[in-house]
Image 1 (cartoon, each protein chain N blue to C red):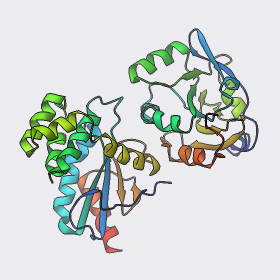
Image 2 (image 1 turned 90 degrees about the vertical axis):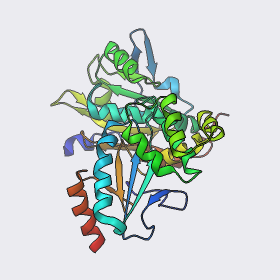
Image 3 (image 1 turned 180 degrees about the horizontal axis):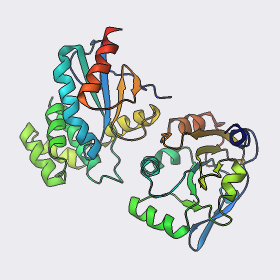
Length: 174
Length: 165
């Protein structure tokens, strides 16, 4: 239980070198308040570790609990097709309170998605991609968000930046 | 603790039948569900934060369970009206059964009742289409067990099971 399945691959959205000694993966939901709390902490971790860290994000929208989470994730995937996944990821977490379709369209415009792509995102064209992440999360033992994996193993510690950096640095030295 | 775990119904045994209220005026019995795999989810209480996450997760996975033709049901000692309020609030789309009278009777028969607290353990059972227990797992009470174990167990059921004929 609690191994990452499948491992990080070409299809994943990553920040930092893929061959970094430490790969930190988050299963997250753009409308989840705990993910919102983790967002600045994880940014700080990335800042602190620089290119010693590869950060990966997979979708795990709990759409019954969070009515806008699924659509938001699909917009992030749409943005990924023009190389703007992370800009969208950041915008969504920074605007967790406003994830209705109109707001999503505004963010889409901001990252440079054109009308056709926005239309595709609104019509569910990226749902399967999001669903694939969700399924991989279930298979990896994800039981809520955010769930973090370090080098493929579930991380159960505290999620503040200091604790995380200490934990990741020690793993990186192994 | 050893006492409790030794009494948990074993893999390979017939799952004890039961008939419990799913709403104030409806009941669900295990024997009714014969012919398809059943995922039984015992949990301590409606409204407690971990249960909330656990049922929220399973609620997202109904299509996945459906692909195995499996029916998932939740069981706690909460009353039917409490379940109705909880299910409504969380928009749950699978039945929650009330092990309410006699309290905890079904959980006892499965060996997953916590006498001291008067609630069910956080326990999962996968029962095959013939009503035989094929997998079970008791989670530490405060830890959401997720769903990977359930899916692995459903994967291991014989292929003709869980398929519509």
